[in-house]
Amino acid sequence: MCGIVGLYAKSPAVEAQLGNYLSTMLIEMTDRGPDSAGVALYRDSPDDQGIKFCLRASDPEFDWAGLINAAGNAIGKSAMIERRGSHAVVALEGEPETVEQWLGEHFPGVQMVSAGHRIEIFKEMGLPVQVIDEFNLREVSGSHALGHTRMATESAVTTDGSHPFSTGLDLCLVHNGSLSNHNRLRQRLRKQGISFRTENDTEVAAGYLTWQLSQGATLKEALTSALKDLDGFYTFAVGTKQGFAVLRDPIACKPAVLAETDDFVAFASEYRAFAGLPGIESAKVWEPEPEVVYHWGAA
Image 1: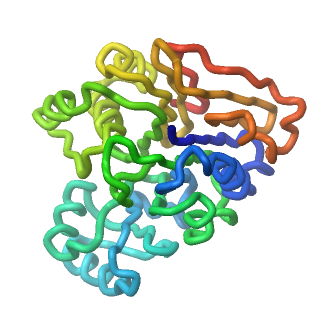
Image 2 (image 1 turned 90 degrees about the horizontal axis):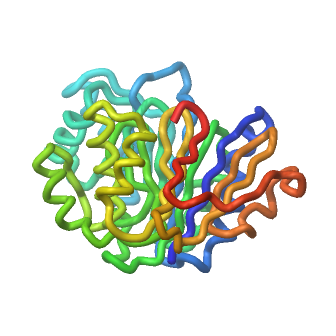
């Protein structure tokens, strides 16, 4: 089941209301996934602080200031950007692998949710409206965003198993469908140095794209290769630093629809997610074709 949405701003007015519009879209998809929800936002950090890490603490009273101080002493320059619910966006010096290893050794109750120059991922168990309110996502501005509400079918209902999944800098994936060869593919990718935190098939698909990109493929090439290497039925929405892409499998049995105006590009599992968007009555609206990579921005 599951519901996925995406919004790419083409005007300052939509950028300013990005979180509000995406939240409305995701809430419309509630009955497609009551177990958990998440959003990937793409926006600049104050003062261009370089790589930012979105971290999640299992302890609601976690001492984020203590982590920042410890990171500054151990791995280099660090700073708090902002805190939202159980997550915090921080700037930390070092590559993601180094930071993740350090967190595991010194702060095992803290997990890395995403890393990049523009991406921030917030996800939790619960209905979309609960997750949106917990992270106060309606107020957020940005260039583009993806959202997902999950009906857990292939793995447990946990925050770790929730979408979006990020397996590379500024890359994320949301998925509606199911892969049949994800266990075998996971084994292959691990041999290539790709690590996984969950048993979710979507994380395998994200890891596959990360691996393809590391081999020099463009995102369009990576998604085209996925049509051959990923067995199952799926609709993917992939976020990058500059934009997002959409792909449906050859059968295209999972619902998907796109809408475009001079101000935005919107994507969703169902038409009704577009109802609250400005100027939707004059938008070009269509269903994406199977096996065709659609992308906006420098994706």
